[in-house]
Length: 230
Length: 356
Image (cartoon, chains in turn brown, red):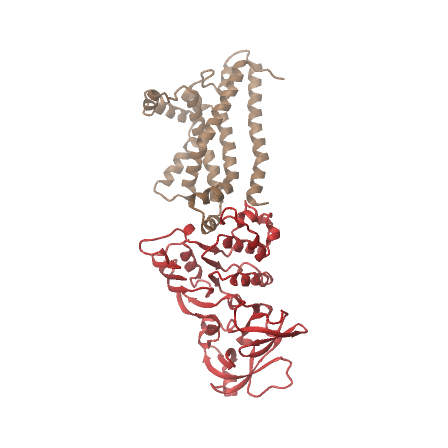
């Protein structure tokens, strides 16, 4: 049995909270953007698509620096948020924001593919059965997208959990506030003699990632089978 | 009653129709690309014509100022594909458009799907899925039901297995717009025939009259043409029924209860015309008739309308036979039809209140 030092436990719990919040808050927004990209017809759709994918292709440190510029106390957004007590700079909410932005393209991508696979003829049939636009979405589109939403959430959570570069650039590595599991691993690497704690943290990271994949792999075929009517 | 005046460009052609459908089953018949589905989709609110007026039972669904969305039109639509919701079982599919608490039982019984309620759509055969799709549209309690070639995706045995269910549907009295390019289905189900050609209505009239009109053959198609008769079962033996029809007694294959009312289609190409009473024939149906009208088309064939009793038959013969036998209006002749020429699909049940 591996015993973890208290600061490692703190980092793990913080990482779980940061990734969960990042994923759950991104979910509705990612769904909305996936709808815009899959079904929308508007000017600037290509720009939106590129902007959503930007964090995927930019060096994470660049994304983190951009967030720092925008959300620091002097930044254009930070200046508004800080007096309201909603500032995110050097707070765990900032870590969640960075993780969410990095996870966002992966979530949108999975949901967009799922939405594009939904047969619009089924939605048409639902409307001839008296269902309003919202009811069609809730009772036909959303359930048929469910496997893609699950895939997006799993992928997003894993990405948020492992996010390091943008997080450490944006909110640094403050123990108990912004030192997530990857940041803690990096910090332990800098300290001589911390190998046991380091190995424990690495094992925990592997276990969480493996757990997410196992849950998703168990769940995904069940949802897919349900949706396909088998 | 449905009124639809629609002018709209769709793809490469213009749909320009003025359709009036009263109760009963109105068949929209025409070749692929004639605009049948475009018209039906506009009526259902699934597409939006540039100009037009659509009203159902006096309620305006579309005009210059109104455009009622599809889900408020009260029009049921059965598509070519069943379009069942794969994530719902049959029962939930049936009840999708129904009132809360409604029992799917009676409709499921009528369509013979009561045993499938807990199955998933993926496990249904094509014929079962088609019936569930019809039941789902019915349970929505529509004021008009559009059936857009619901049998087109099925093979011939499946098609003829479902036709009796559609006859039961017709007999409920719900106004139906039935889209088809198969005259076999139209002849069995429809009360009114609307012929659509290249986006325009080429003919609209009562089914039996229309099918006996030789001048409409070019629109219907020579191999599809033929009279439709209402027939009452008078006797049966050896798998052959004797039925009373407006043109006289006929012998057709099949069995049904005495007094049962059938709808019978006599294809024009199955009729032989004889100028003297034929003797020693195996054909059981030899009717004395009078030539009423001849209509020559572009090809080698002539459509001949024959009058017998209160009804008409339509026969298709060659121009050569017309000349050789000097067939002309007013001449009494004999019409010969083999009993076995009546395919299974040509004998259907008729509305209970139909007169033989």
